[in-house]
Length: 337
Length: 301
Image (tube, rainbow over all chains, first blue to last red; front, side, top):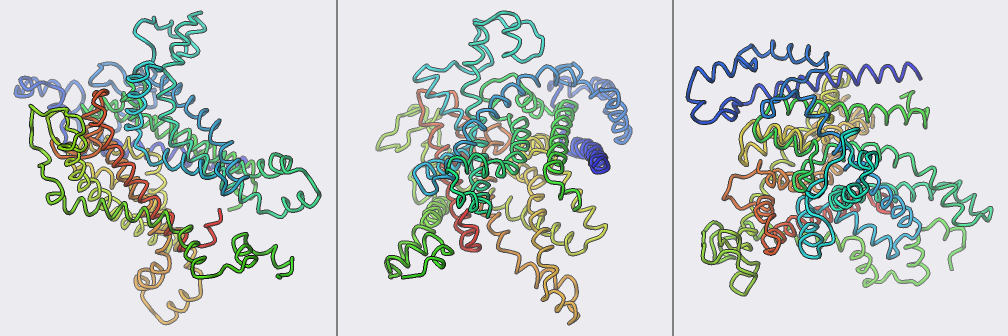
């Protein structure tokens, strides 16, 4: 067991290193020139300014020296300085990450709360109206463009009905609470600002539904398939032959066995949510990592793009590691493969 | 009357057929529709969009980029069925022309990415040893990057434009095909016909591409079909962010983006989104139907 985990760990670290190299290569071999994007037209035509600028950001060093600088900085937790915000990238990420974690955690909870029961019901009453409903919900959730769904939601519930607040994390009439964790839903009650708390909750409703739309479908489908698989096993027939009640069979026998693939998918879905917030955050003006990534990509802020992508890759690798290890714990046969 | 023991082993559908003696022509047709009806519907939707893309100039009397400031933001009417946008361009016309970009990009990304990934996965599985290790670790590595973020970084770096966005998407698109192709080839590899082909003395490339791949192509075709909708979605998303087509090229994602502030002129953003939705659902239906057709056992899940 320990050997399995440590070998997984070594692979994970190697993956993260290789990921930094790939991102670095992409950022360096492409023709786009960050200098021309950053400086205005006037400054970009002045060779002296361009030269000073390149020197300041180390852009005049050979590529491998720059990669070495990047790696050495990394070992000290330094991801470089964002060209646009003029602050360390790690500070930018630390500032924007909590909002993304908040949004994607709420969206993940929503997907599980709706997706799991819907999948179980769909499997129990196969080919009934609820099965068809589950299929339609997951189909539309997976097929509808996120950005379009966001527009429809905003147009209907904010513009037309006025039930939900507009874009943003809190209303403009609210004072943000003192920054403790960065998560609005925790900081506001800590400061005793219950009005701000409820305002933040209402601002979360639309973006989290939009973000959850795809994962609800995914979890529903997987749960349904896993339940049907479990229900076709011999032990279910035995339980039925014993005369156990249908509800007891479902909850006590089928569901626990169906949960394994769902747990795996759940982990990956959470990682996907954390990193898939770009479109949702951009539309809802959500001050998170997704919007930050988009803004950095558009102006070719390489240190920022590299930092974010690295963070994202680490999240992916860590989630995969956790999934692998939990799988081995739940099903010891995995290790022998 | 069938004895009970046999009936328990039959599927519900077959049991119904036996019990009612309904294996008539109309019964068969009804069952075909129940199984493949959605796939047929999806196929019709895709075909309609295909015709719209091909025959765009014949279908609509308007040009996609004629600006008409006097007639801007007109409501849907008999003159402009789906209204006009902020520059007075006919929304329906732009949606029809937009089908060209979306379908072309979807097919390009999935076919080229699918071919490249299949090649990597098939070679890895057939070669085994260090070549497999290297190729599959590279594939795993690409999975660390969420497609949209990496595509965004690449598209931003290469410069904005349809061709560059397609290149960016190709970079992130092949790994899932590599994984599937590898597992398919691994499954075929140990079968007897491969050993027979080797005994006859066929070269490895012949065995891999002429013997094994044709036998493994079914699931790949299913994945390609299901993935077409996905590719169209991602491209529309990148276009929405301003990293796809260059204006004024009509494209569904950028049309939604142009109309996103116009809440009371809802038609500008709503209809292009519905266009995306129908295409994606269409490809999903066709893909599901193909899978049922190729693997009738999986249908019951």
